[in-house]
Structures are given as structure tokens and as C-alpha cells.
Image 1 (tube, rainbow, N blue to C red):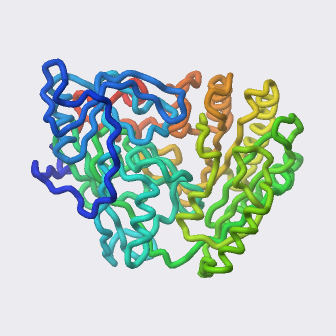
Image 2 (image 1 turned 90 degrees about the vertical axis):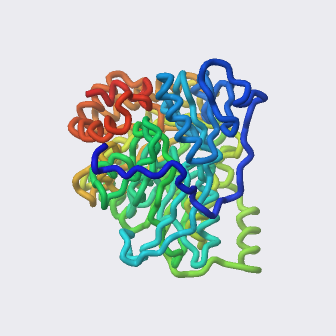
Image 3 (image 1 turned 180 degrees about the vertical axis):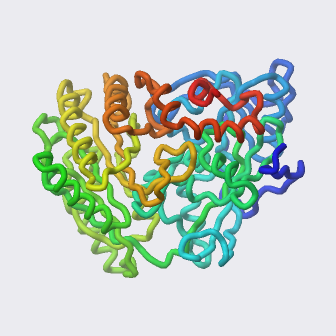
Amino acid sequence: MTNSTHIHEENAAAPSGSLSTLSPILSSKAAAALDGPEYVPESIYVTFDSWTNWGGNLTYQPERTFHPKTLGDLKTIARLAKTHGKKIRCTGSGHSWSSTAVSKDYLVSTREMDKVSPPVHNPEGPCEGGDGWTVTIETGVLIEDLDLYLRQHNPPLTLPSNVLVGCVRYGGVLTMGTHGASVNSSTMSDMVTEMTIVNAHGELVTYSEAVDPEAFNAACLNLGLLGLIYTATLKVELMQTRMRVRDSYPRLDSIFNTSDPSASGLKLKSMVLQQDSIEFIYWPFKRFGQETFNEHIWCKQWARTTDLVPEGEEAEARKKLLAERPPSVDHPFFASFHVGEEIMEIPDAIHFPFGDGKSTVLDTGIAMKVDPDFKNVIEAFSELVEKNYEFSRSMPERMGTALELRFIRSSNKMLSPVYDEDPEAIFAMVNLMALSGTPGFEELAAATMANWIHRYNAKPHWAKMWEATPGVVPYLRQEYGPRIARFNKVRKVQDPLDMFVNATFEEFIRD
């Protein structure tokens, strides 16, 4: 064991201050009914069902799925896998489209690891702005549950940026380097100040920058390759401000004008840097069920404000106005989109309604370093608009495709798609999405990803669809290069038998 680790005692206490416990989703078979030589304590629920991700593009049959509730459960599962030579991967809400959770052996569902410790205030701590607030959570905590917990704290707290949806869990969010839309923040993994992970030996290891910066860097965005995450400690801030959210539906060519991409790029740059966050969403048709090209793009902009959120009669009048106003995008999936402006609490602004609440989607996405004049973003997004329109209009079943564009800062995490030595570098996060089951989307996604990585030196978002892209693994090995070796120095201490390495990452991560 290197000096980068600290081994906890066997009976280390779980964080206090639990959120409401989620009901386990279990089959009729339980641990006591297990066949085979493995001994599993009756306290650990085990199921034998197949697993399908949220988007519906992945289904597989693990040998068994464990539903741990405690740190002791995680240690038992790791030791069991080591004894019987089994592989382990984890799943939360299943919102990844790549096969990161796929394991033919053991699958660990983190849904019941949902405790939150009371936030801690350390004015000398490593938090931006000097607030010094942190919160420690178990790996299965939902985004929306932590938002609520922090909002109800005295004083109210919040994360400065977050992912769009609230129904995903922090284990996957942190291990895959997911992100929000704030140009003043990077990935969620960059908000971590400490992480505890059960390694292949069944030991709980604490990673912090103070003890070992290199091991800590590897742990913050680890792709599930260091073990079973138990807790993560995140930087949070006082909720002293709100967000002024402005929704507009401008002409596409008023922003993405390819006749003069340099001038358009500088205009886009000015828009991005003047906001806390900005997001573009584009659906390629003017009307639902018609093939007429859409000349407009949805634009959502967030800016910090000290103005208060409307209450009472003012708030009711606002709700009534929105309810009576027709949506700006004529597609049922975008029925919540309305042009206008309002003041919102930070979590409400970040997690805006997107979708009909029933449909699932497929998603491929990349991170592309932005040129100083943003010209490459204008060119790449405009090209994608044209290709997506041609694809979508080729048959009615393809008309549910859409594009999304956000911007964030670079990361220093060695396996991050937005890694850069310049902390001020900006990355464009581009997504191509379609309703689940859209015919031909997998092929479109692979071809689009290949174009992005070869023309713009883009990196795939680990949680999105990227594995079918021709030549993607050799490309990633070349691009991540020495950082893979750095990561492996940490990983091989904690997982010398490659217990946590599945087919998704085995070629990428090999020496």
C-alpha cells in the first residue's frame, strides 16, 4: 500500500443525516436463495434480473446484482468478487448510454446508498469564494435529493453548477465526468474535495489532495476503475444569489452565420462570457410532422442576480402567464419551452423541464476545445445542423432528433474529456440526441463522432454513445497517452487483478 492511501477500520461509521430511504427494487429471489459456492450475508439483497439502461440501447444479464446498504456490504461484495475471480461494475439510475455498467459477473446497484452528512463549514477550506462549505454524500444520492437537502439547510446551500436532470445519482455523475452549462465551472468531478472507495482488497481508501494529489486526481474522475465508491465530499456555496433565466428563440443564422464564421464566433464568444451559463437546443423542423427547415434555435441564458424570487400574487400571475402562452417549439417533447425571463433559485434554474416526462432518448456527445475566436464552434455546429436535418427528414421515425450545445471550463483531471493545462480554456459540449428506437441513429452517432474527433480533435463524453466509432480506442489512447500511465500507477495498487475493468475500458486502460 502506498502513502497515497488511508485504510479505514472495518466498522467505520456511515455518514449521518440520511435522506428518506428509497424502496429497493427486488425480484422474488433474495440472498438466502443463492446457488453456488459464494456465501452472501442475508443482509445483502441479491437479484438475478437482466439489466437495461434508461435509454434502452443496452440490455445484458449479469450473474447477479447486489443491492448494498452499508459500507460493510460494499466490503463484503468486493471480497466475494476477489475470492471467486469475478468482475464488478456499478449502476445507479442507468442514464449512461455507453456500456460502462456492463459486467457479465457482478453488478452493484447503488440506489440504497443514499445518505447525506450534515454540511461542514471550514472558512480556510478549498472552496472558491472563501465560503468553505462542503457536503459528504454516499454514491447513490440523487441529484434532486441533494438539492432539496442543501436548500433546507440553515444557511441554504447549493452547488454552483450541475447536470440538467435531477433523477440521476452522484456515483455515475462523478465517475464519468458529467457537467452542467456554466462557463465558470468545469465538470462535477472538479467539485470533489475528498472521495472514499472500497478497493479490490475490500479496504476503504480515502483520496484527498492533501494526502496525495496524484491519487486524488485519479479518484475524482475514475470511470469506476478504482473500486466501489462509498462517499464523495463536494464543494458547495452559500445560496446568496439567484439566477435570472432568459429564454429566447432567435434566428439560427443570427448566431451561427457560416458566411462569416470568425465574426459569428466572436459574437457567440461575447454571449457566452457575459453569462454564468448558456445553452442552445435545436430541433430541425419548423412544425411537428412537417419537413420545413427550422430557422430558429432555442437559447437559454442564466445570469447571477441578487433580485428575489417572486412570491405570492406575483408568482401566481407569472405561472398563469406561462400556462396561457403557447410553447415556442412546435414539438410535444419541447412543450415546456416558453420565451421570457424570470428569477429562480439556482437548483430550479439548472434543472429546467426538458422532455415529456415519458419518452427516453439516445445521446452521443463530445467535448471540443474552443478556438480563441469560437470559429470552430460555428463551423462544427452549423455542419451538424445540416447533417441532422438530412437524416431527420429521411423518414418520419427520425424526426425526433435534436442538438444541444453548452460551454464549460477545462479540467485538470487526467481522464477528463475537457482536460487542459490552461485552467481558463473553454470547451464546447455538443450533443446529438434522438428518441429511443430511432432507426439508424446508432450509425449516425458513430459517423458523427468519427467526424468530430478527426476534424476537431474532440473527445467523447464517457457516458454517451462512443464505443461504435471506428478507430476510437486507438485515438483515445494516443490523446490521453501519458495520463493513462499516470492513472494506472494509482489503479494497479487498488485493483491489481483488474476486478473493476470491463470490456468498455480494458483496451483503453491497458499498459
